[in-house]
Length: 147
Image (cartoon, rainbow, N blue to C red; front, side):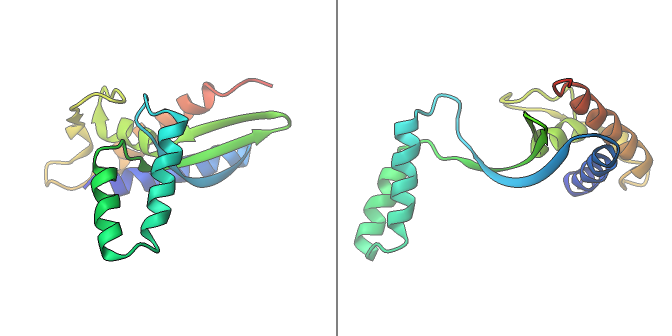
């Protein structure tokens, strides 16, 4: 209920800050791997996923069994920022999680929904949501390298 509105407000607030800053940004789909995944495992998983596209049904079953034992990435969405020789990246999903949850910590098992973002009728409180998204986007920009 909150993720899509949070995403909309995060993107809009990012656009406003980008318009006023010297940073340029592009949005990219990325794969997020579990922290301990080695480059060799990433390459193997990528190779197996590509092999699935042309595999016979029997080969596909074997590949699925192998993949089930390997770490799998999940999709992410990043804003890559550039200014002269400087580069930075903002993880948009992580930023949305910070908006939607109270005291969100990455890689923690559970988080509590920020119920202050929901009004007494059970609808999204757009003013509170926008204010929180704006604050968190500004904090993310404040952490960018100075130049």
